[in-house]
Image (cartoon, rainbow, N blue to C red; front, side, top):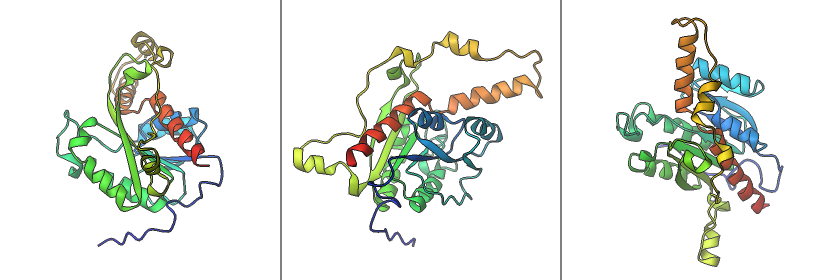
Length: 261
């Protein structure tokens, strides 16, 4: 049985230390969390993505970030304050196999948990299909609890940020039990959620016509040229995290973190 002895403190750096938060990304895709972190003024130190095309995109976003390829074999030791990751949803989504978090692809949550356990960041951001709530979220919460983290979660739609499509996703933010919000419940009989209130802003979104016009034209369409790259791009965008929403999540963490200082 795995020994889960925990250190006295939940993370490797004290809350009263540096004011600069850092970020590491798992299942990085084309860098939705990376872009959101950058907008929030948070530096991404490393990422981990299996697909070649997506890793090339990540390199363009931040050439200085360390890159890892396979989450199953990655030995990531560099500390970051925030780890984000949208582990595969193919076995969880209603459009997938619905085998749950024990499925071959969605079961990669165990590797994300391993890296969280080893690095012990201040915060963890998890993204997945809302169907995770009935196909394995209790396992996620139990695993986080074993290593001293509590979590809050919400299902959030892109519509709330001015985008003309729903794309509802489940987002969880985990943090140490030692710095959590339970004291608010004891003292005030109310909790102050880490998720901040927001109002819809149409300027945050992009109209469908604008997105279509931003796709460059290609003179030659064949498997070895533009068409293949275009399909990779469409698939990558379809699986990506909305950077505007990611920015919001990082800002929520910044507010919470500053309140602890």
